Image 1 (tube, rainbow, N blue to C red):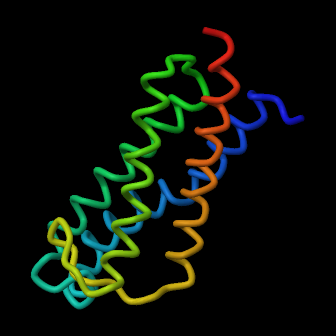
Image 2: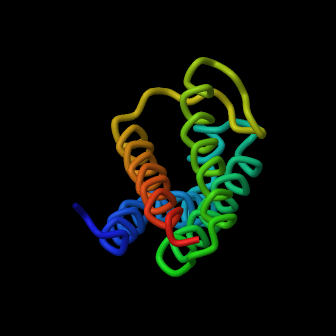
Length: 135
């Protein structure tokens, strides 16, 4: 059986790339290549950048929560928020504009990001199961 500590580390490690992708990539692109952001997101480019930065900061916070917290309530709150991120991407691929982010095209890299976020969600659930017996 894998220890709760190992599951925490696996979950946290799985979120490093998605967090960087959500914070660094849109920020740098908006600063150095705003025309590219406009071409990808159209008039919703600013809203998209804000959405991704807020999502990345949220995910960064949850990496810390997963690694350090034994508070079940905090861990429970992180699961739906990260699950929402995965669902928003797949719903937006179906042609729906969400939070100002226009419909997205299929991207293998984006699917990788969502797979890593799913590992984080599963690790969080596993940690909750492991901690449940300690309270």
